[in-house]
Image 1 (tube, rainbow, N blue to C red):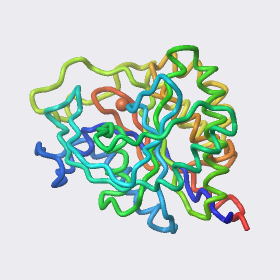
Image 2 (tube, helix red, strand yellow; image 1 turned 135 degrees about the horizontal axis):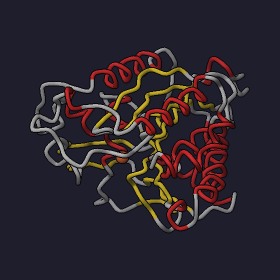
Image 3 (cartoon, helix red, strand yellow; image 1 turned 90 degrees about the vertical axis):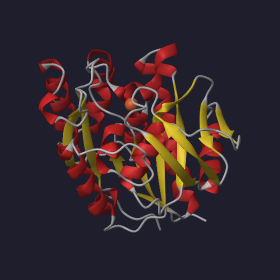
Length: 300
Ligand SMILES: [Fe+2]
């Protein structure tokens, strides 16, 4: 078929607090708001994505953790109740999601041909992780687009950040090839925070923003350095510094999502757009978009 393309890539983190703060009907707890800086960032991301036609969201979540290879959701429909294991007081979300199984299978096949260990998840009772659900909700609250959902192979834990990066580079390139061959227009999403050292106690009112700030100056400096690489169009430098960042900032880039994203985009040298930055229980979170459609030639 051919003619498909990635129209945008996004860093789209998944703190359940952001969904809690929005009070959507799918989430049981209710709140008085909070974390507005990040939620306004998601507002800007959604407005930007609304400007470019796309068919599907392709997402890698660090909370779908698989130790034997990379897995992809492989049935057209999943539904259930997702409860955050750490914050059940904030996130008890009833989900009902559509999967683009054809594109998932195409990514599977491309990744397998590249020598990666990949599997399709075809258990209809499978409970989708809250990282996937939160990122999907915040990017597309109406759930208007089908999803492709890719697991996080924990190669960083068995091996190292360097091995994780090599594997995610191959997976990212395979993802791009499959999208281009599919004829579809895709938005790709890495669902992770930046610095990930968090507080161990929650205020009595979780959305009391007088308690919210970064856990340390060192974490702040790392987040700002990484964001500066993004908006400066230095994706290769970001990848080069990923081992130190991931180790020293306890960053959620350990799941491979950001490395995968950079390679789906061909390691971009154009500037990313920072839609928002904020902390959630002390972790650093940025909503960032690489608007590929403005910088890359369409595939004929
Ligand atoms: Fe997380």
